[in-house]
Image (tube, rainbow, N blue to C red; front, side, top):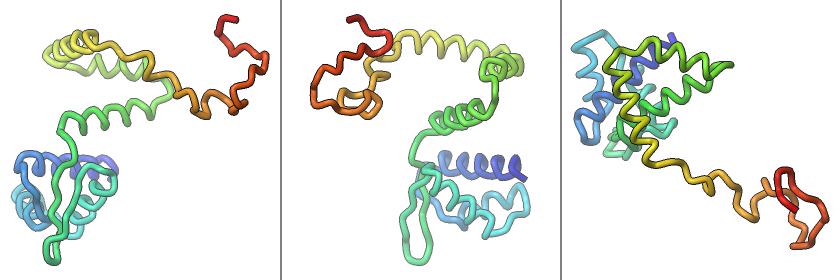
Length: 154
């Protein structure tokens, strides 16, 4: 059931991106019915779920909603991959298995992506909490407490 729902979400999102315009439940339903028998309420529920997840925005037009994507297919795919990766106890092992499932073309695309990512290394300052962030501990009003944070030079 969970896998079927994920497949249906993907099928719906694919149509929304392909049409590149706001769509109604009925439009999606009619297109899906060319491939499978499916109920109106099922399509409506999945579109609503995608809206609540933040993948679709919607606008009421008369008695119906029109849905459109919030971001690109690539961003959606990356989020799905990240969610799947986060579910495992051993991310490194999951990556090894994932790479083993890749076709030669996919491995080459991965190499290309890693080369591009190397051109734009992460900003180390982005990983540091803001000076007034709770992650830096309680505010001591600027007073020197005499304590040296771990890893800091005194």
